[in-house]
Length: 269
Ligand SMILES: [Zn+2]
Image 1 (spheres, rainbow, N blue to C red):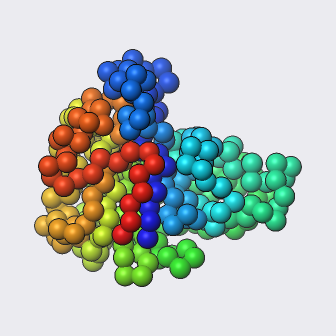
Image 2: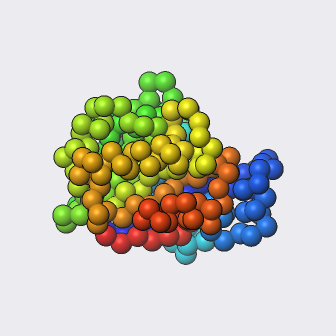
């Protein structure tokens, strides 16, 4: 499998619109890996993960064609992951129906948003639930419950398996609750993509990870054998409020064998 990180920023991206943080200023000045669009990924060129407000720009930047996407699998409905208005461009009169059909997979809030905005949505919409695996093309996708999201939302991180290889994509999660940890015990990952939203700013907020919480999560996954010495570990979903430029995060995490993710990074497993 090849996972292509299209965006690696937190909710407001880096540099953020109205931000004057040091990290935003650095990104404006230096560009490159310090510019982070809203988190999203593409698996093997056709399984799109999340559809946020930067989708158009990511497609253009990476030379992609959205008509190649067989499926859009959502993690949760926060605005940086679901830009419901952007989905209209797959429909008439913007497009011919024959070209743009794709299956949407999403939790309760995603499905509600799509049907509310598009009562006549012409393509398949599949409700996903944490801990209930489903088949998407020839991939097995298992959502696990994130510690994140709006009240009542089944926010998810995604385990994707194919051909004996497996990855976990976890852009938005605090430290998981015990049922998620228990569930993870049965998996051996070839790739872990894990948020490090709050970077060097250590905070008790539970819906995201700072660098110490990131290390704790990885260590516990190692202890239980879900992460092994051959698992590739990549960060994502970095906030400009995290006080870490790309190079600073690399200096901290590189020696631990962690790759700091950036927009455009492709990871093969
Ligand atoms: Zn997010």
